[in-house]
Image (cartoon, rainbow over the protein chains, first blue to last red):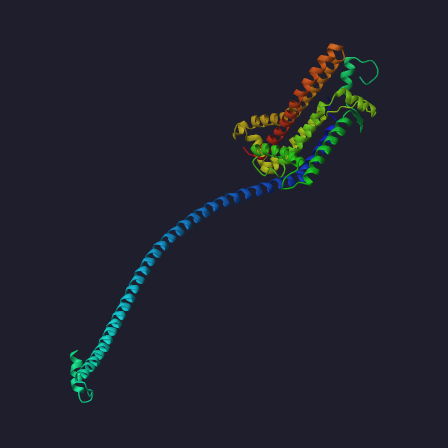
Length: 156
Length: 268
């Protein structure tokens, strides 16, 4: 246990090792560690942000879904209304059409009846003239008896 | 043991506790403990070279297992320094603490090598007196403590200025009253003398005592079958316990270094 020159050489070695560590060992490793810490912190922050955005997006999608349902319901209600309206319109049109057809048919029938009556009247007149001619055994001159024949025709 | 001549407990102890010396000048002071110097330099180059080789390829991405191990050690030191030293620790104090811890731990750990087998190995290399553990040499521990002491004074003057430091020496801890100046100065002188002494002797004493106990167990193991059996068991037990001591002493030495340096940075 004697103090000697070893002390100074040891102290010099110590100084060199401290210098080496301060200069070459500590800074690069600290830099690497701090970089990694920053990367991890950034990653965590990004994760947090992603989570938040997911929440917002799910809110948004729920809102959109609700709105879409609402609109679909509205559209269905409108469509039903329109459908009944169309049916009503069609009914109205059909009724008008049928009425018109009915009126036309009636008019035609009446015309036919009138024409048939006219024909019948003519034939009856002819028949009456023929009958009278037969009775008189002579030809009735249609021209001479035209006013008579016309009055008979009108009576029929 | 390896000396070949008569083997007595005294010669055994003396052999293991004698440094290899080399004279570099006249007088007892100008001798060099070659074993202490070579072993500590070797361990320093080995450990700091390892740290450097890992750090050189350090990535901020996924670290390799070796880098993770180094980072574990560095962050452990960094945490300790952070809790004690309030300032820019990355500039000097934290790397210095890492240097102290790693180097002292490595030097202490040499104590775990089986002392007689190592002596045999050294004998084969032609080294008769060769002590493996640099920290069992008071020169080594005192060199570290004294370096820290000078750093302490350097930072005292750098941070507070020469006037500030002298003011602190004469005005603390009892007060500014001129009547108290001699008492304050005496108190501080005692503190400044005791710091490097306690700092170095604590480490030296613990490791030296551990070495002595290994030697005593080794001596008992040479006395017969019972001695060998119990010596083996005790030696293993003491070595396991010694793992704690070498780590603890390295840690205490490092913490005291940090505490002294941070005290130098703070004004009272």
